[in-house]
Length: 632
Ligand SMILES: [Zn+2]
Figure (cartoon, rainbow, N blue to C red):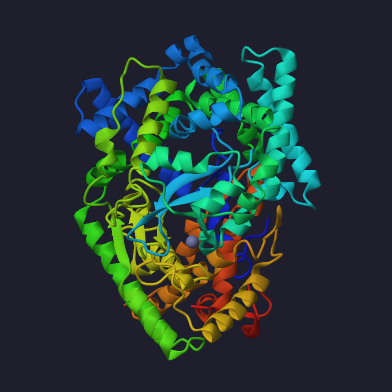
């Protein structure tokens, strides 16, 4: 094969060799820069947790509970012996619900215990006043990975998904005490109920406009629309005093709730709840049941093997004790010096954005002033937090209980803790991600960027990498996250994170028009496995381009800057090899463009790319100047 020229395909030219030799682990849908760090972190932590458990010497009481849970999930001998038994209590409880009256009588307990109900209720930050909390009401998730599979035009994919999903549910029901006729009935009802949910709830694409989640309804109206559910009683039971207002994330779902749940549909709901509970429970039962419960996801992602019990145990434990584990990781594997250096880079990027915004030609002075105020208020969280959340003092369990019981109790403690916050102020010191996470985020609701220690390692970042490499790696990712402060969602949240549109009408119109160009640039971009959805991915694409623009500015101020190093590093962080099924799935549900598109599309918008590698009209990664789009 001819050598791939960087001018034609940056992604494959940089990652081609890796791509050829990389092996996707049997229990993963993909591998790449993120996954390789993930595996490294996981192995380090697994070793440490094993060591602590063996010596009964724990860092602190939180880690002691984490280690004990780890041992419990790892103990497949006990789980395999117990089989389905630990799940019967929960399953029978659902089966015994006689009618809507009984449902209403038990509703608080059902919600607190995480039994599937036909809606979702949570306490969240109030987007209009982020010092406060509110009650957020949403529809339930569909069994299929996105409600869009139930929309017209998706019939073929839907039929395929339903087929795979039915196989899993059928196999799971066959393990229960239900008669074969009942198994058939439960499956049929579950699919029918799910189809109604699918017709009512928002799709992922619709959820990416998250400021549209904020729809205040009076509790009275909600109660009327959700009859026969006794909403006010539920709220009073949960919160002592029912709030007068509820934030409805999905008004269409609320307005049509009665078509989903009513006296006649109660049995159908019950069968659906039974199946959903069963699916959730299998994660904490025998190895055989775990595998059955994962059949659907495995088929969708092309995974052909379950993680080994110890990895499985780590992933589960990490879900319940994420902050203590993250804190342990950061203190042991992430240095003070790195924390200082990376914080410095973050502030340089913010300063550079200030300059870019001042020079921006779309925005009026009025909007610019507010944008700069927002930038100056960004809370920068690098590496690890000062402390873990107080909830971890409460997350204790009785070692004698079955794993499923332990998990149910821990889940209940978390829900009770979350519900108890409704009338209390929000805690601004809380981190949205634990310190060992291999990811980063911008949180529009407190105007903060978080870069956990987990992602602050090669190829993203290292004190040993050059500044150009760090700017092409973590710098561009940081610029990406910060630009979310100014995307279609960020434009609606002010410097405190409150839902408060700070743009003038004209500026927003101009911004919207420029996002159209970005949608057009990416929409339909062909990859070997399908096309990019420009609308679904627009915010993330704008962010990628913003991140590159701001770090290229910084490159100009960098001594001995090497643009070759910069772009090569950029391509390296997107190194990914994934199973075809998984790639297909992501095109529909992921608001990020596929890694290959991210690596190859973004540079084409920048002059520096053309100069660095002498890219001309003859090359595949050339884009005519009038087609290049940069928003930030
Ligand atoms: Zn993003």
